[in-house]
Structures are given as C-alpha cells and as structure tokens.
Length: 155
Image 1 (tube, helix red, strand yellow):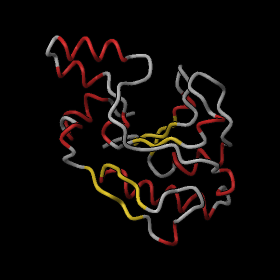
Image 2 (image 1 turned 135 degrees about the vertical axis):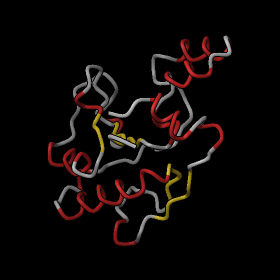
Image 3 (image 1 turned 60 degrees about the horizontal axis):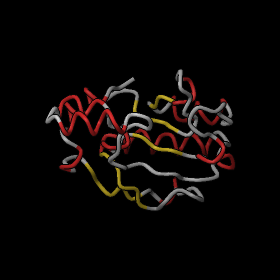
Image 4 (image 1 turned 120 degrees about the horizontal axis):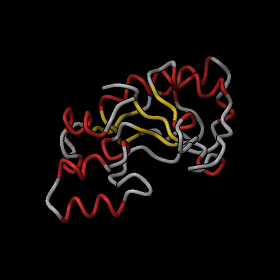
C-alpha cells in the first residue's frame, strides 16, 4: 500500500498540481455514473482504465451506483487537527503524512452511501477484484474500513 510519504516524495506538494490531468474516459469504458472526464493524477489513468474494463467484461457494471470522487486536497478523515497543527508549526513534511491519497488524485470513491467509513462494506468480492486486479488497494480490508475507497497500490 502506498503511503503519503511516498506520494509526497514522488509528486510533491499536491497544491502545485504537477501531475494532474483531465482524463477523457474512452467511449468504450464510459459506464453510467462515471464522468466522461476525470481530474486525476496521470499515474492512475492506466489502472483505472483496466478497472473499468474489468467491470464491463466481468459483468459487475450494474453494481456501480455512484461516482463519489477522485481528486480532493484534504486531510484523511479524523486527522484534520493533526494536519492543521503541522501546518501551523511549519512542518510541511509531517502535514503531508496526514493528507488523504485523494489529495494527489491517486484514489477514487464509489458507492459511498452504501460503504461509509467504519461500516461493513457492501461491495461484492467480484467488484472489488476488478479494481485490485488493476493495481488498486481497497479500503474495505483496512482496520478502519473504508469500503468506498480504492487507491493505487504503488506508484
């Protein structure tokens, strides 16, 4: 699983938008609720194309109910005060460790209403495998379950 430290080392401060692109989803991969254009890190494009293709070819498209975002510069939920304290202290390196992987555009959320943070995920194992086979880690296996969340496994 990638860490914020690795993301910061590779991509730098997410406020600089260095590696962000507007990805045009190919027509053959356009799936209902998925936007036709996704603002994301260029590193996520090939894995997300593979995940969408997997959803289509493995018959899991109908399980995708909502697209709940990719890029969002924000701390991880529950770490807002730690982030703010590190920023106030001028410790940018520490502050970066409290940012969500979404801050670098390397994560997506889907079906959020049914897969809330800390609750038992509802996504099928087949749906999840469409993403994990494409190079994503799934938050549904974490100690603090985040069943809506998929992030790049490595950069």
